[in-house]
Length: 424
Image (tube, rainbow, N blue to C red; front, top):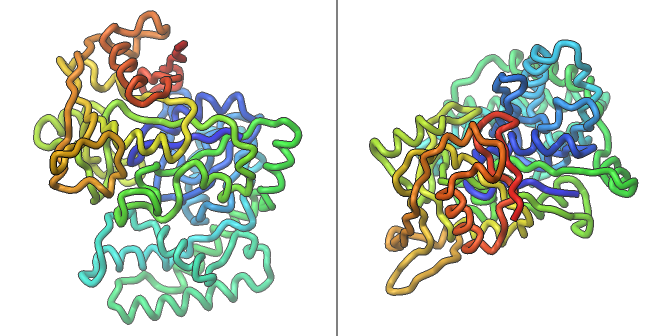
């Protein structure tokens, strides 16, 4: 089994890379997160955002598995399938989708808990997407939640109503604005009935049987390394483990079966919401980079914070994941710059550190900058390594020397075909 991971704070372009390489796999399996993040893919020239569905959904030969580690909002899943069905009218999407019976459901009241926690002055504001992801994982750990397999139980409807009614009264008592309880309940059950059209099964058995039969499996991560609940820039992180080792837990696969680990990084950095961002830039340079790179959330449409490439944090992410193949995206966005800044280390109290956890970098730490010559060649027009401008080749060589890993893929634009495999 191979794994594909984002190495920064998300939005590295994972969806495009998975879409491109997935044609070589038999199974694409999502192992963490929920509908709080989106992978943008261009299909027949149209941009499509996948939030819960694995990125192999466009290929008829691929089984797309939503694994046990994912939390699933049935209403969001129904909306996503229906939107995709409109783009693929003659395709039986349900035949391509398998869902773990052990994955947990996002109940409709959880979104309102998210809103309450984000807007209440009594709680820390994280900057979540308010999709109910954290309350779902919280109730999973408390062993008070409902799983996908429970949809098929005869007691499902009564159990759901009991939980919703209890939480509804609690939220009302806290002053949270709510729609009618019956409306929440009816809409949820309608989406759950739609959910039954998918194949609800023990996906860990299917994946392991496929691996025993020499089938190729690609594990797809949501969010990214620096948003990991344990190793990211806590508390401004997501609610699940996002690093490569989490794929084994989220899908039920032994670490002995892992082969390649693809790590995706932009040529610069972005993040959404609050949290440390040592190489962040502001003002007109930030606005220009944000506009040029279309740095707005694929799910929330929120403007992303932008900054220059952070090598100490990237080294940390590569170390955590054990990356074997590095993917560089959005170098095309930096085209036309006279020089490209890269943070190579941090200085604090006379000490220089080139490998750091993001949470250990505070306001007293000063970035150490390296400025490389920029390139001025539209990358979307090139399709061979020999055409890559000299300055970008030197940029890549510098990264490889610093990171001690080769760049395997170079993305030259947002479209599926705009990618070059580099021969190092």
